[in-house]
Image 1 (spheres, rainbow, N blue to C red):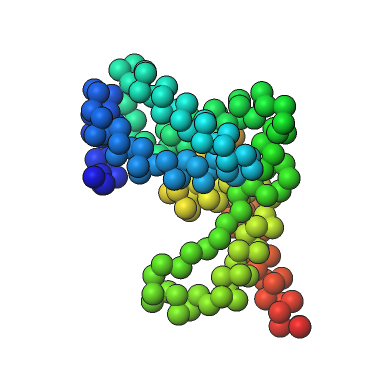
Image 2: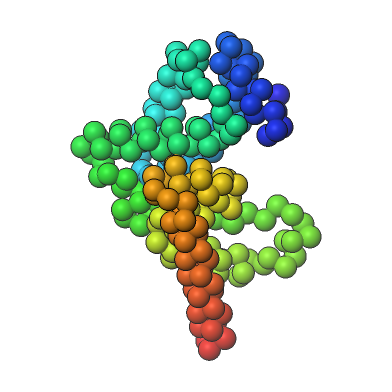
Length: 194
């Protein structure tokens, strides 16, 4: 059962009231996103899976004490980011946010699913976009992914990334787009000279 986004408040309410069907829906809709997001922080997939399992166990145990939310995705992404940050800090085998610190976190692979768009979005263009995006600093990549791919608001991104002010989040995304534009221009210029 897939629940439209506008029904998320009701779905969350049903989950909090003990509905296992609501739990199954939430889990199936978001487990993949949580895993993909979590792998940006660490290369240890097992640690990410463990944190997701712990998160859902805690949600089930505390469901009656949870507050209402208008965005389940925002709530879960914020929870998994915090849980992973704590787990990685405790785990001596992994540096803090090792996926981010080694520059590998928040990479992107563009998937073209719209056939009309696909004819203009050839392999070379796709490859150029991916390369340019993946050259951005990690915080910029995370902000862009949360804003454009996950459709989170500036406030939600500010909260998840613990930036401090919405104004700073807007500036971060703006700088990201400026950097991306500059990188794409340089790639285009380089390919024309080659």
